[in-house]
Each structure stands twice: as structure tokens, then as C-alpha cells.
Image 1: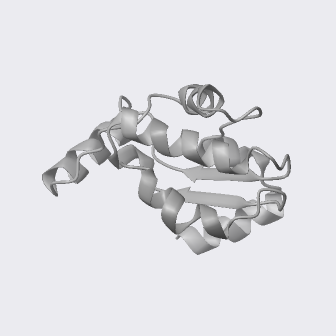
Image 2: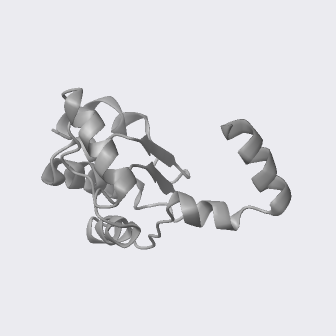
Length: 129
């Protein structure tokens, strides 16, 4: 929620001229929207000097469909509501741009599946089962 500790702990170890990959897996959706945006803005700021840097976000979206409603109930029942979940892939990409990333795109799992080749898709399907 407070990005100052991030600056103290991480930024001093980052070389702004070296490509940096930031990965966030199922984190931002648990934060209030303003706190999630502060984290994204911080990430955009510390990587802005290097065009080759990237932020990969793997967070749930679309709480309004059947899967999303069930997911929201399950996490809320465990005392961990998704306070900052966004409604669509487009909203996710818009937030990234609004927070300072020049190029942003978002693909949901269905879109990701569509990008896989037939061979890769069958490999993934075998692992998922």
C-alpha cells in the first residue's frame, strides 16, 4: 500500500538502464484501487529509463461473469476480498497506461489460449488436467 518501503528495499538495487522484468501474480487485485495504482505508478517510474523493461501482471479480471462471481464469493468467504479487481482486460491495460506505462496490452486466459499453437495447446491441456 505504501510504496516508500519499495523504494528503500528495491530501487537501490535496480539499474534504470538495464532491462527489468517485474512480475505481479495475484497481488494487485487484493489492494484497494488507489493502492494498486500507486504500486503500478512506482513500477512505471523505476523502469521508465529502459524501453526494454516490462511489467507482467497475472491478476483475475471480470468479477461479473459466472466464474468471476464464484471466485469473488470464495475469496470473500476466506476473508480476503478482491478489493481492486478490474472488470476487463481493457480496463487493466488502461490502468497500466494511466499509471505511466507507454505501451500496455492485456490478454485474458481465453486470448492466451488462442495464441497457443495446436501442439502447445495440447501440451497445456495435458498439464491442466
